[in-house]
Image (cartoon, rainbow, N blue to C red; front, side, top):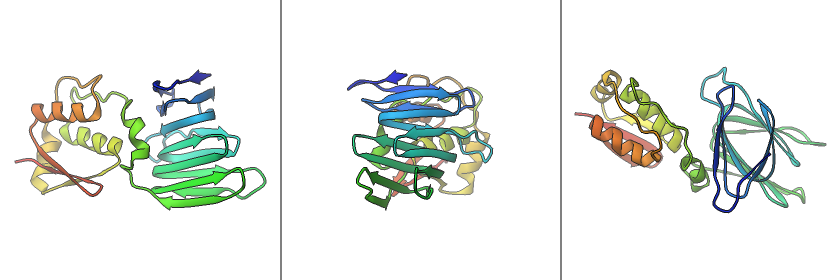
Length: 212
Protein backbone atom coordinates (compact mmCIF):
# COMPACT_ATOMS: atom_id res chain seq x y z
CA UNK A 1 0.00 0.00 0.00
CA UNK A 2 1.41 3.37 -1.02
CA UNK A 3 0.00 6.68 0.20
CA UNK A 4 0.97 10.25 -0.64
CA UNK A 5 0.05 13.36 1.35
CA UNK A 6 -0.70 16.96 0.43
CA UNK A 7 2.81 17.57 -0.91
CA UNK A 8 3.84 14.01 -1.77
CA UNK A 9 4.57 12.52 -5.20
CA UNK A 10 5.82 9.01 -5.99
CA UNK A 11 7.34 7.53 -9.16
CA UNK A 12 7.83 3.78 -9.57
CA UNK A 13 9.26 1.50 -12.25
CA UNK A 14 7.53 -1.87 -12.52
CA UNK A 15 9.34 -5.14 -13.46
CA UNK A 16 7.95 -5.08 -17.01
CA UNK A 17 9.12 -1.50 -17.56
CA UNK A 18 5.93 0.43 -16.87
CA UNK A 19 6.28 3.86 -15.27
CA UNK A 20 3.65 4.49 -12.57
CA UNK A 21 3.38 7.92 -10.92
CA UNK A 22 1.19 8.95 -7.98
CA UNK A 23 -0.24 12.44 -7.49
CA UNK A 24 -0.84 14.18 -4.15
CA UNK A 25 -3.33 12.59 -1.72
CA UNK A 26 -3.34 9.22 -3.46
CA UNK A 27 -3.77 5.70 -2.10
CA UNK A 28 -2.63 2.83 -4.30
CA UNK A 29 -2.38 -0.90 -3.64
CA UNK A 30 0.21 -2.75 -5.73
CA UNK A 31 -1.59 -6.07 -6.09
CA UNK A 32 0.68 -7.65 -8.74
CA UNK A 33 3.33 -6.75 -11.31
CA UNK A 34 0.56 -5.95 -13.79
CA UNK A 35 -2.27 -4.78 -11.51
CA UNK A 36 -2.83 -1.93 -9.06
CA UNK A 37 -5.87 -0.84 -7.07
CA UNK A 38 -6.62 2.88 -6.84
CA UNK A 39 -8.86 3.90 -3.94
CA UNK A 40 -8.15 7.65 -3.79
CA UNK A 41 -6.34 10.33 -5.76
CA UNK A 42 -4.70 10.06 -9.16
CA UNK A 43 -2.23 7.76 -10.91
CA UNK A 44 -0.43 8.19 -14.23
CA UNK A 45 0.71 5.11 -16.14
CA UNK A 46 3.15 4.91 -19.05
CA UNK A 47 3.44 1.35 -20.33
CA UNK A 48 5.56 2.30 -23.33
CA UNK A 49 4.82 3.06 -26.95
CA UNK A 50 5.89 -0.30 -28.44
CA UNK A 51 3.04 -2.54 -29.70
CA UNK A 52 4.21 -5.40 -27.45
CA UNK A 53 4.48 -3.28 -24.31
CA UNK A 54 3.32 -5.03 -21.15
CA UNK A 55 -0.20 -4.11 -20.06
CA UNK A 56 -1.16 -2.89 -16.63
CA UNK A 57 -4.64 -2.81 -15.06
CA UNK A 58 -5.86 -0.08 -12.70
CA UNK A 59 -8.76 -1.31 -10.58
CA UNK A 60 -11.29 1.10 -9.04
CA UNK A 61 -14.74 0.64 -7.54
CA UNK A 62 -16.16 1.97 -10.82
CA UNK A 63 -14.40 -0.63 -12.97
CA UNK A 64 -11.01 -1.78 -14.28
CA UNK A 65 -8.97 0.32 -16.73
CA UNK A 66 -6.54 -1.70 -18.85
CA UNK A 67 -4.18 -0.12 -21.36
CA UNK A 68 -2.92 -1.03 -24.80
CA UNK A 69 0.57 0.48 -25.11
CA UNK A 70 -0.25 3.89 -23.74
CA UNK A 71 0.07 6.85 -21.43
CA UNK A 72 -3.04 7.41 -19.36
CA UNK A 73 -4.30 8.80 -16.07
CA UNK A 74 -6.94 7.48 -13.68
CA UNK A 75 -8.37 9.69 -10.95
CA UNK A 76 -11.01 8.86 -8.37
CA UNK A 77 -12.79 10.69 -5.57
CA UNK A 78 -15.91 10.07 -3.50
CA UNK A 79 -18.38 10.13 -6.37
CA UNK A 80 -16.45 10.28 -9.65
CA UNK A 81 -14.03 8.36 -11.86
CA UNK A 82 -11.95 10.19 -14.46
CA UNK A 83 -9.81 8.58 -17.16
CA UNK A 84 -7.65 10.60 -19.53
CA UNK A 85 -5.76 8.96 -22.39
CA UNK A 86 -2.68 10.69 -23.72
CA UNK A 87 -1.49 7.99 -26.10
CA UNK A 88 -2.80 4.61 -27.22
CA UNK A 89 -6.04 3.08 -25.95
CA UNK A 90 -7.64 2.21 -22.59
CA UNK A 91 -10.44 -0.28 -22.07
CA UNK A 92 -12.72 0.30 -19.08
CA UNK A 93 -14.47 -2.89 -17.94
CA UNK A 94 -17.46 -2.00 -15.76
CA UNK A 95 -19.75 -4.15 -13.63
CA UNK A 96 -23.25 -4.68 -14.99
CA UNK A 97 -22.66 -2.62 -18.12
CA UNK A 98 -20.79 -2.77 -21.40
CA UNK A 99 -17.05 -2.16 -21.60
CA UNK A 100 -15.89 1.16 -22.96
CA UNK A 101 -12.86 1.96 -25.13
CA UNK A 102 -11.22 5.36 -24.65
CA UNK A 103 -8.63 6.38 -27.21
CA UNK A 104 -5.92 9.02 -27.26
CA UNK A 105 -6.98 12.61 -26.82
CA UNK A 106 -10.09 11.84 -24.78
CA UNK A 107 -11.13 12.41 -21.18
CA UNK A 108 -13.96 10.25 -19.81
CA UNK A 109 -15.84 10.85 -16.55
CA UNK A 110 -18.46 8.76 -14.76
CA UNK A 111 -20.32 9.59 -11.54
CA UNK A 112 -21.89 7.39 -8.88
CA UNK A 113 -25.26 8.63 -10.14
CA UNK A 114 -24.58 6.93 -13.48
CA UNK A 115 -24.02 10.16 -15.42
CA UNK A 116 -21.24 9.93 -18.02
CA UNK A 117 -19.43 12.65 -19.97
CA UNK A 118 -16.53 12.77 -22.40
CA UNK A 119 -14.49 15.46 -24.08
CA UNK A 120 -11.35 15.96 -26.11
CA UNK A 121 -8.13 16.75 -24.26
CA UNK A 122 -4.67 17.80 -25.47
CA UNK A 123 -1.49 15.91 -24.66
CA UNK A 124 -0.11 18.98 -22.89
CA UNK A 125 -3.28 19.79 -20.93
CA UNK A 126 -2.68 20.84 -17.28
CA UNK A 127 -4.16 17.54 -16.00
CA UNK A 128 -0.85 15.88 -16.98
CA UNK A 129 1.31 18.41 -15.12
CA UNK A 130 1.95 16.36 -11.96
CA UNK A 131 3.40 13.49 -14.02
CA UNK A 132 5.99 15.86 -15.51
CA UNK A 133 7.27 16.65 -12.01
CA UNK A 134 8.43 13.06 -11.44
CA UNK A 135 9.56 11.91 -14.87
CA UNK A 136 11.90 8.87 -14.77
CA UNK A 137 15.49 9.80 -15.59
CA UNK A 138 16.55 9.53 -19.24
CA UNK A 139 20.12 8.30 -19.73
CA UNK A 140 21.65 10.67 -22.27
CA UNK A 141 25.10 9.05 -22.18
CA UNK A 142 25.60 7.53 -25.67
CA UNK A 143 22.03 8.42 -26.69
CA UNK A 144 21.51 10.47 -29.84
CA UNK A 145 20.00 13.93 -29.77
CA UNK A 146 17.10 12.59 -31.85
CA UNK A 147 16.38 9.87 -29.27
CA UNK A 148 16.42 12.42 -26.47
CA UNK A 149 14.14 14.88 -28.27
CA UNK A 150 11.63 12.13 -29.09
CA UNK A 151 11.61 11.14 -25.41
CA UNK A 152 11.22 14.77 -24.30
CA UNK A 153 8.32 15.37 -26.69
CA UNK A 154 6.52 12.21 -25.56
CA UNK A 155 6.91 13.09 -21.86
CA UNK A 156 5.67 16.61 -22.62
CA UNK A 157 2.62 15.37 -24.53
CA UNK A 158 3.54 17.14 -27.77
CA UNK A 159 4.37 16.00 -31.30
CA UNK A 160 7.95 16.37 -32.57
CA UNK A 161 8.54 18.09 -35.91
CA UNK A 162 11.77 18.94 -37.72
CA UNK A 163 12.01 22.25 -39.55
CA UNK A 164 13.96 20.50 -42.32
CA UNK A 165 15.61 17.17 -43.15
CA UNK A 166 19.04 18.53 -42.27
CA UNK A 167 17.95 19.15 -38.67
CA UNK A 168 16.79 15.58 -38.21
CA UNK A 169 19.92 14.19 -39.86
CA UNK A 170 22.20 16.19 -37.54
CA UNK A 171 20.17 15.11 -34.48
CA UNK A 172 20.39 11.47 -35.57
CA UNK A 173 24.20 11.69 -35.85
CA UNK A 174 24.79 13.69 -32.65
CA UNK A 175 25.75 11.48 -29.69
CA UNK A 176 25.28 12.97 -26.23
CA UNK A 177 27.46 12.69 -23.15
CA UNK A 178 26.85 13.45 -19.50
CA UNK A 179 23.72 13.19 -17.36
CA UNK A 180 20.41 14.95 -16.71
CA UNK A 181 19.48 12.81 -13.71
CA UNK A 182 17.52 14.73 -11.09
CA UNK A 183 16.60 17.55 -13.48
CA UNK A 184 13.09 18.61 -14.43
CA UNK A 185 12.00 18.20 -18.04
CA UNK A 186 12.76 21.84 -18.81
CA UNK A 187 16.08 21.85 -16.94
CA UNK A 188 17.12 18.76 -18.87
CA UNK A 189 16.16 20.36 -22.17
CA UNK A 190 18.27 23.45 -21.46
CA UNK A 191 21.21 21.30 -20.37
CA UNK A 192 21.08 19.21 -23.56
CA UNK A 193 20.74 22.40 -25.60
CA UNK A 194 24.08 23.56 -24.17
CA UNK A 195 25.69 20.23 -25.06
CA UNK A 196 24.29 20.12 -28.61
CA UNK A 197 22.84 23.51 -29.62
CA UNK A 198 19.45 23.61 -31.33
CA UNK A 199 16.52 25.98 -31.62
CA UNK A 200 13.06 24.95 -30.47
CA UNK A 201 9.60 26.44 -30.39
CA UNK A 202 6.17 25.08 -29.49
CA UNK A 203 3.27 25.82 -31.82
CA UNK A 204 -0.05 24.45 -30.65
CA UNK A 205 0.84 20.95 -29.44
CA UNK A 206 3.92 20.54 -31.66
CA UNK A 207 7.59 20.96 -30.72
CA UNK A 208 9.54 22.28 -33.73
CA UNK A 209 13.31 21.72 -33.89
CA UNK A 210 15.85 23.57 -36.02
CA UNK A 211 19.57 22.71 -36.10
CA UNK A 212 21.94 24.72 -38.26
